Image (tube, rainbow, N blue to C red; front, side, top):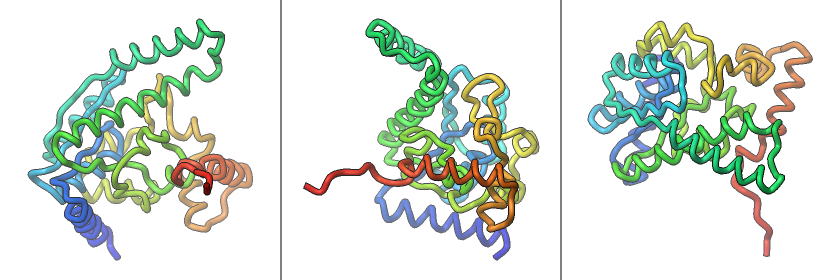
Length: 247
């Protein structure tokens, strides 16, 4: 099946999800990256009048905000922007102060606490908007991220539907080109923008190309294979509902 037919199939699937859920449309958080750019274009095609891109900066670099606006303009999708920087600082600082006061603070965990709080504040805000509009929240995780667990539980992983979860990263780029995503976004290094200089591949310890190859059943260097399998095993809890006892 060629790319355009697969895109059309994804658009039809989105319409079906909205119809079956009894909702009115779909929204997505637009980060300025390739994954959210592709999803923004898909939901706009599915629901030209009932789709929304939400830009949620949290101490974000200016380029990500500009790229997010560029994506929205090119896709012709309506957007709103809500800056959550102050809310993030308030919650994080208050939480860390209480932990320090009670001798429960762990310096080594501060960065991940900060990063995951950003993702979870964005999720809560997206659902507040979705509740107002009776929309579904679309996720932006691709197959490589789903397999390795490269997403925040109840953060960017907290969504109603995942339109590109079966696409490997190279396929996301193929779809992006077919959908007319701006070159500035297609050419930038993948990053969740969680801290200065952060990139996806640095954080994972391997590359998307190796993860994609692994998912395609191809040979990858032993070191990268071990990293990929370790990430998959460690993130199993993210891909399942919380466990409960049979009582």
